[in-house]
Image (cartoon, rainbow, N blue to C red):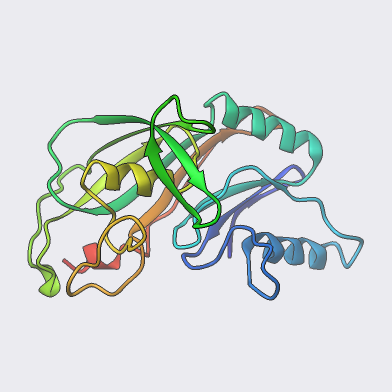
Length: 230
């Protein structure tokens, strides 16, 4: 865990790929427990610290997350999420052809808790939730085939996430035929590649819940190694 920003109201951290944001599984490491331990140590053991979970990232995904350190900040940040005021930008390596231009996807997703998966379904389906994102090729991006023995066309894309549904980016990108490299749950095994899901939440912008100052955080993805090696 890397702390990007902290004050009395919020803490913003970089989550590593492979660690759950929050889990109920006994003995499994998760980011929320790690942050609470960090805050507990800073307070010299003065009681369990408050930590409001505002948004999450899938376990295989690297990226930036903001947490609230008091109920007032939690309420404000949650409202920003609901009203679309929190900006989330991702980078991903996808398999398949990507046409130039900005592409907007609007689908309805339904989660299956038993299999821990989501599917694109009809708006009329019970418990279906609206999901929206936009994606485009990153500036200067080019098609790559056969890199490092991978016989697959790869592209680096920028994704702007407008809603925060379960596995949203992975489900929607796979649904239009360009699954994320390494995503075996929604995509397909790619010959020559044995790494994780190539997705990073690399930029987060929000208003500070106390001062209303606009804060922006960015990181350089480290889990997109396959593309950086091309």
